[in-house]
Amino acid sequence: MEATGRGINDGETLGTVAIIGLGLIGGSIGLALRQWRAADRVIGWDTDASTLQAAVVSGALDEGAETTGHCVHGADIVVLAAPVSATISLLHAVKPYLTSDCVVTDVGSTKRRIVEEAEEILPGRFVGGHPMAGSEKSGLIFASPTLFDGAVWALTPSDNTEGTAYETAERLVRLVGAHPHRCSPDDHDRAVAFVSHLPHLLAYGLAQVSGEDVPEELRQLAAGSFRDGTRVAQSDPAFWAEILLDNPGPVLEALGAFASWTDRARKAIEAGDHDTLSALLDEARRARGRFPR
Amino acid sequence: MEATGRGINDGETLGTVAIIGLGLIGGSIGLALRQWRAADRVIGWDTDASTLQAAVVSGALDEGAETTGHCVHGADIVVLAAPVSATISLLHAVKPYLTSDCVVTDVGSTKRRIVEEAEEILPGRFVGGHPMAGSEKSGLIFASPTLFDGAVWALTPSDNTEGTAYETAERLVRLVGAHPHRCSPDDHDRAVAFVSHLPHLLAYGLAQVSGEDVPEELRQLAAGSFRDGTRVAQSDPAFWAEILLDNPGPVLEALGAFASWTDRARKAIEAGDHDTLSALLDEARRARGRFPR
Image (cartoon, rainbow over all chains, first blue to last red; front, side, top):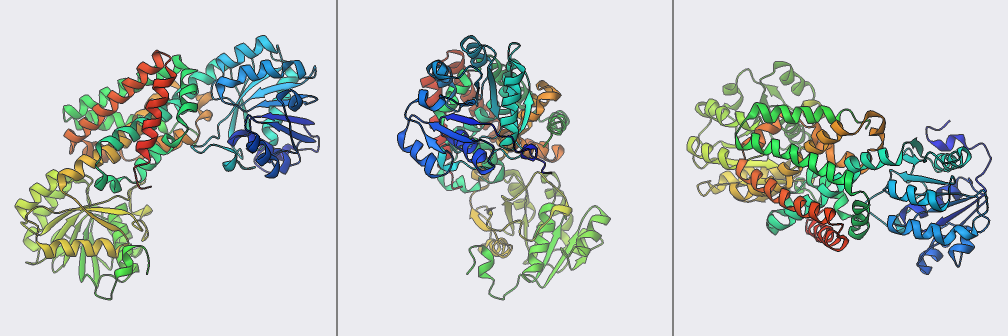
């Protein structure tokens, strides 16, 4: 048995899966489903016609649809893999074409608002999802059938989500190789503010002040800690501005906690206080050790 | 020809090299010199007798010395590979045993104070050095002959450094596989405050607030951006407290610039201002693009 979820593929497929949005995540879902023959048929739609065509050519889809309505028509599962700002309007757009037991899920980086609004539109059958397997790279060109291998994939049902809808979403997650992790939309949003949104903000900030203040001839001195610390500052800015603005409460809380910590470090440095600074760093190192990887 | 400095090994060796301190850096220098037969003899000393013995057994040294004096006696080059706080007292300790044309270099992460004080002790023959090839891992056990392959290695001569001393240090750097980068101690310290010391502080801070505020059952959601952003928070706290306190001016400047940036981001998030936030992130992404890798 494999360690990843694909081990559970018992031959029963997901039926027809519709993917709206063929970027890094949507494309990788299609590639994984088709590679592992986990769906009878994978059909997709994208705002960009050439991306849609490329998704068919690259094997991420069996078929491209001309409209969102055609795409979801007859589908057993619909995956909304568009930016967070587009998810709700897409759900409105496809709703009239959904079969009565179709399950809809998304892959957005924030969950509270989306789940709340989706619950109004499609009570019980929308299951919020968020694969923790992004990258600073975006677009179908970087899609891979192994993107989700061993990754955690948050699923955030509401109190009204039907049990069978949740099970279907979980099945999709396992079949593309990921580990489902069930939590509430609120818990999700607060946790990712700290472990994903804050790291992105810090990476952008580090890139900005270093790029501004380090003269060109000294930039070569940037090595591993800078590279790792700024990797995700290469992510799409408009996409990330949307995510941060869709989760303002938790993001501001995380930023505030971070500012308090750096303030304590700053004071210890100003005071030349080795014991205090060393203790602060040691406590932080032990906090890092509480995370699984 | 290889791309790394080892390509220039023309058969002329460095003579006898003495390494004081057999941790990750000192051990890797010994392993590289011996693997590439770049020195006639590599002799070492460490505060810890079992580390010294392990350095001989692992092939990082030809020989271990009983005292620092024995270690440097007759050496052509002495490498001080101890924590920054110990460098100057080690230089005092070994000075009486140095031959008249011996060159001394170090590998400390800060350079201004060390170069200034070393210049008083050994005028003209101390060449400050800093390999940009560390790791969150420390100790001889992680040493490798390829640690410096292709890495940049800052060399920070003063106005009084003898030309031949500088050339010797540069030769050592190339022979272990690194690219020497000449700059002043002040320029070095200011640049590394931004591209190394700040990333370390941010990593520790991110680890601390996330470890404190994310409940155990949600820590699985931490993925790539968190792992990369906190990797160096696994570094030795006392060692890093020393480095930060040896470079307070530039580190506080970098922390201040960073706090101003996050303050601008915070205001844009509070205002729900997508255009401003997106422009901030976009500028930061372009700043990241100015760095070589």
